[in-house]
Length: 174
Image (cartoon, rainbow, N blue to C red; front, side):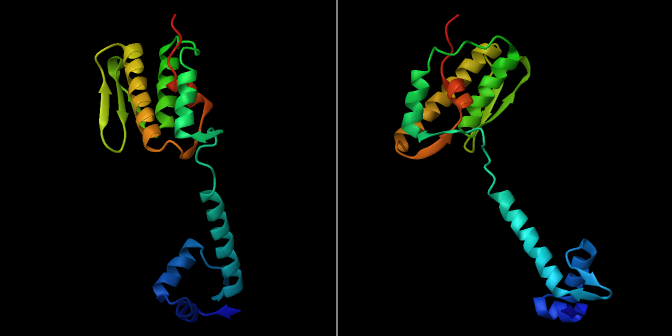
């Protein structure tokens, strides 16, 4: 069915200017000077389906471990001392970033080896020592947050990543 712009505006319950805006953006299908209603509806349905498919994409595909908060804390403790200490600054930064990502905390690496952890409540700065020592302190702070949350929600199931598990575990002694 073909409609004039004015009839389509009335059909959709919008102003004619809105219809002209949709035409300019390519949101409606034109057939000459008329709007092809069926083709426009099909186009809109395809856009809505594509949008809904995008929203169902897993935001953390790397989180392949499903367990409760308390089980994850136990797994972290069981992994303590089994992972080799990082050797380079890049490896140290990766470990801190993985640990922070696991708990949804933002991390920034500052000049002179400083580290800032940012969550929704506050910013936590570790700047007193070199990068390695600041990283150890930052990971310990993240471990305390994990322990605290695991006591509040011990049976709540969540998805975890192997990299986060390793990053939250203490490093093997050299």
